[in-house]
Image (cartoon, rainbow, N blue to C red):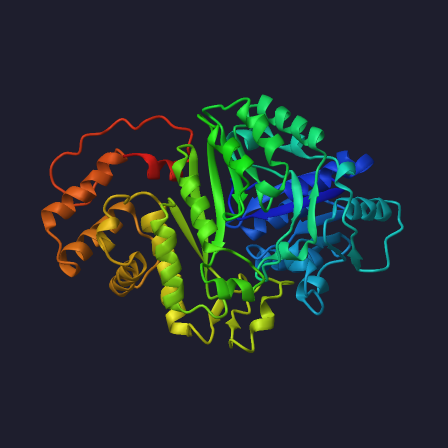
Length: 501
C-alpha cells in the first residue's frame, strides 16, 4: 500500500521509466510514501487494475505516450468507475499537448504540462494536506536543473543487470525540426556537470555497463566530460548509446571518439532526409556533403556502431527523392537504416503543411501519415511494408551476406522495394517470419525471380547460418553446417550480428 502510486506502461521491458524515477526522487518528505509500478504493453489490464485497487493509493501518476495512450485511457475509465476518490494525475506528451476536449482530460483529476518534478511534488503535498488545487490544468515552469534530485539510485539491481539504463546530461534541443517534439524546447539546459559525473560513477560502481543517453545531440551536451569519464575506463563490457547530428560534429569530439579502443559506442544519427529543399521547409538545415563526411568518419571507427534514421512522408519528398537518399545513406556504409514513417505528434508544427501538401494522418496513435500529394495511400502502404521488411531482413543482421544478392549492383532501394512487394504478395503478412521461413523466401526470390545461380545462392545463405552459428536451418539447405566460434564482443545482440564475419 502506498499513498502515491506512479505507473508506467513501457514499450518494452528493457526500457525503464526514467521520468517516474525523477518524480519520486523529487517528492521530498513524501518520497517514502511513493511506489513505482512498471508494466509492459502486453500486461492484462485486469491485472494492472487489481494491483492498483489493492494498493489503495490516494494519488496515481501516469505518463501518457503514443504507445500507451489507448491502454491508459481504458485504465482511467475503470479506475474512475471503481474508485472515483483516487486522484489521477497525468503528464507526458500525449496528455500535455492539444489536450482540450480530450477523453484523457475528461478522465483525470489533474494534468501537468511540461516537466513535472516540482509541480508533481507540490501537487501531492497539497492533496495530502487537504488543500487540493481548484484548477485541473497545472502548467509547470521548467525547473532549475541544478536543484533537481537525480534519480539514478532508484534503478534496481535487476534494472542494471537486465535493462537499458537511461541517463541525461542535458535537456532541450537547439534545432527546430517541425516533426519533432524536442523542437518545442528553446535551447539546451545542462545538469550540474560534477553532480552528473558523480552519479555516472555510482552507476558504474554498481555494475552498470549499458548507458543510453537521452540528450538530443551529445555534441551539444557535456560531451567531453562524459566521454572522458568513460574513456578513463574504456571497459570492454561498456556499451554506450548517443544521439549525434552528423554534419556538425566538432573536430575535438571526433578525436575523443577515435580514442576508444574497447568500449562499444552506438551512434543514432538523425538524417531524416537528404533532400535539402525538404529539410529547409521543415526548418532543418542539413548540408549533405558535411553529413556524408561525418558518416564516413564514424564508419571508419571500429568501436562505433552506426544507426541512421530516414523518414518517409515528409512534405515535398516523393518516392524518387526518398530512394535517392536511401541509396546515398546505404552506400555511406552505415550498419543500420531505420526507416520511420512521419507522425503528426501533438504539439508539433508539422500540421502547417497539411493543406499545401494534402497531408492526411491517421487519427489514432501513433498518428502516422496515410498519404500526401506526393505519395498516395496505396504507395504509402508499400513503403510501410518496405520499412518493416528492411528491419527484419537487413537491420537484424541475420542475412548480412545474402541480402546483398537482392540488389547486387543496382539501386538498393528499388531492388529491395521489389522484393518487399513480392514477399507481401506471397504471404499477405508483415509479421511471424521465423529465421528459417525468411531464409526460404529469400532463396525462392533469388532463384526464381532474380534467376541467380541456385548453388551460389545456397552457399551465400549458408554462410550467414555459419557466421552466426545457427542450430537450425531451412529445409532447402543440405549438408552440415559447422559451428564457428564467434568473437566475444560487448555489442548488444542485434548489433553483434552486423560485425560477425
